[in-house]
Length: 489
Ligand code: NDP
Image (tube, rainbow, N blue to C red; front, side, top):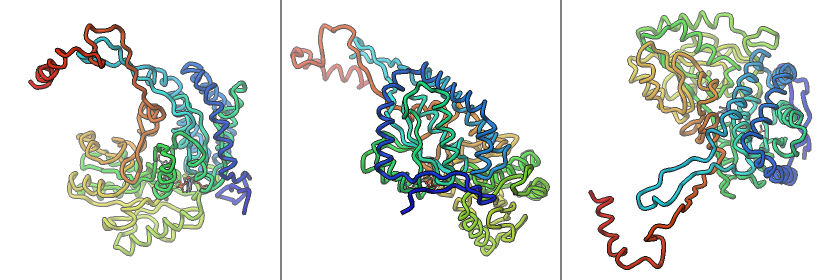
């Protein structure tokens, strides 16, 4: 059995890192250290944690070139895209560090008439140790969404990165330790390996598990966590749709949708994979999209629009979806099967595949886009919602954008933009259906990594104590009348 695995530059096959494959024994030991570090981290309080999270963020910003280069080499995306990923990650760390106290501090609650002698409050307590399992497509930004919120909420974290991007994860955890030299080992730790290591993390004694990855693996993780009643938050795949209405700014919509579909080689959970465009503006939109994508090229050189497929096997999924759509009757507008190489895939746009085609129903996770002509907004909304995945979406409209967005059955929607919600640190992120449940980012993300504890504090004794075995008989006789008076009117 292999004891080590290598990560590679997906453009050149050059080895980037060699890391151990950790099994249950090693993972359990790392989780034990995280338990030990918990009381130190919790005792720092919101103020102490804020200072340390901001020191970490400052360190990463000061060493940006290093991590941008590592993301570029291990994931394959162009350096400017890696820089954008770092920038968004730092925004999220800053927001959670600065807002945790306000959102998670003790909350006063009102009491009722019968409990007027009580004060009531809710404390938001950390779980203890949070396990995080992450994917490779945004090796920093995606796990950071869970890690930063879990840390700011007072948990320690054990992070299992994808086997394709362990070096980025190690750099990220080392940055925390270097920026906070007095912190004990175990505040943020990495366990490396393959799917078996992720499975081991579910069994290693964590108090909550945040998983980001495919729907199939998410189900396996939830089943594994059920054995020990470990609660999970699942951020899974997407099949996001953009709706383009007759009154939309067509050129702006085409520019945004081209980015949302092809950026990061389409390997974005909230990337745009489907467009529903009103028949009235369909030809205009298609022409604008052709102009937008005319000189978009993948490659490894500086200036390439996007990089290679990070995970080689994904090219086969993309090929299957494109082939099936064409066989089903879709017309290729841009590219086709010939656009799909082993590492690099040029943009593919397919017109009007049937609704049951894999290219419409399943996550493709490549630089492809379907464009479907619709007769009305109702038609667009119905088709956009009729898939099992419900992560994000976009609406392009001058009027009624918000009304249409409210009808999309997804966790988040951008209006007249794509992916805007992922860049706003105060907004929650999460899905419905096969895209998972629970939320990371924003106040909802901070609360996701805490458990509420109710406190009822008796401030003074009432002449009659209802919560007593020595209740006078006349009070017991009065109770039914009191019920009628309080609730029966
Ligand atoms: P996978 O589901 O293949 O893997 C995700 C993580 O789970 C990896 O670290 C993987 O390890 C690990 N893993 C694999 N098997 C198991 C197991 N049995 N138990 C525990 N952990 C396991 O997803 P990808 O890495 O391919 O990521 C792409 C997917 O992630 C896409 O579907 C994308 O939509 C989704 N995603 C969702 C986001 C969201 O916010 N909703 C954000 C970003 C991506 P290893 O790699 O070593 O096998």
